[in-house]
Image 1 (tube, rainbow, N blue to C red):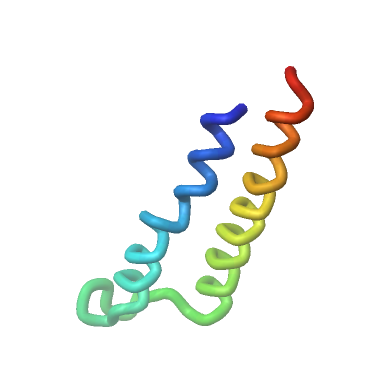
Image 2: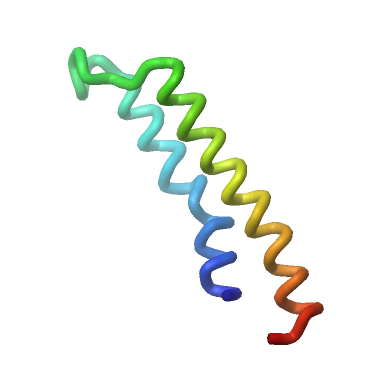
Length: 64
């Protein structure tokens, strides 16, 4: 459980550069991300990080 929570906490590190690249028309041409896609990716990463921040203390305090 701890390793999954730590993985989710580190998720924004590789995702941030990917968002930048996926919005660059030079690299991906007309297949670049749109606003809705960017909002979805950022929202998912934020929710995952929030869940990890809650899960780590609960795991440490809860025992099993």
